[in-house]
Length: 195
Image (cartoon, rainbow, N blue to C red; front, side, top):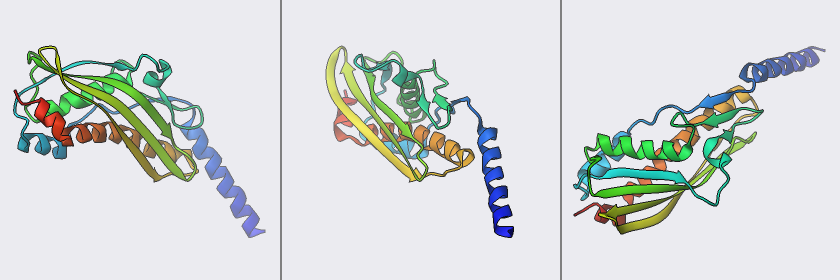
């Protein structure tokens, strides 16, 4: 009998937690520069300042991919930058370059980007995320670098929405920083920034 009562109480707690989360649109936090990326670019060979140009969703993808991802139970995650994940990626790159003192809006060297794929799956046991973007570096209109990069993320998720949703949001946001870090690690990208 005690076991049955405990199970009922546990079910009630889980139901209450689910209702506390509710259906809502959650905004990601503003992009913040990471110390690792700042050090990486300051210590690297890329010393010429660059501008951050246009970023957009790939023309062949549905507009919804740029606007939100589902984080379980009717909850969605959206970008605080123009409700666009492509613009979130642009801002992530911009703040990282600014922190490394490599940002100059008037530079003839410009980095442009295209969001190719964005996926978030906060499953009951293992959460998964995927992000893919194409980066192009142009100097006075001439393409110096053109590459598609991608990151994947996996984490321990939870049956409880109150636990799973914040974890999914955190890992999804981190993928943008990881994608920019991957770009900074590419020796061809660094070469493209040298005049």
